[in-house]
Length: 113
Image (cartoon, rainbow, N blue to C red):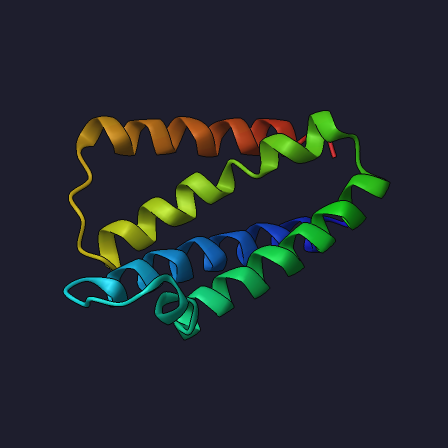
């Protein structure tokens, strides 16, 4: 069940990253809403988020929501890492400390499982 939870988390992160890439691909372009709908990154985002939702529903069939939901905090950690090292965004020390606290909370809550 933990593997399904991690897969749902990973798919959600990939979906978020694909959303960012879709928006980045629109910069500097003058296109209609229909033109934006043709962006492959947008369709990847929708597919990943949709599949992630289906996996999440499977997870909730087997784990208590009070345990499962906080584990999605890993998304904050993963997205911060991608933002910093993939998109070269600035991440200050306070943000890293917050990520460390989230990670510690996930570990503490995961210990119950």
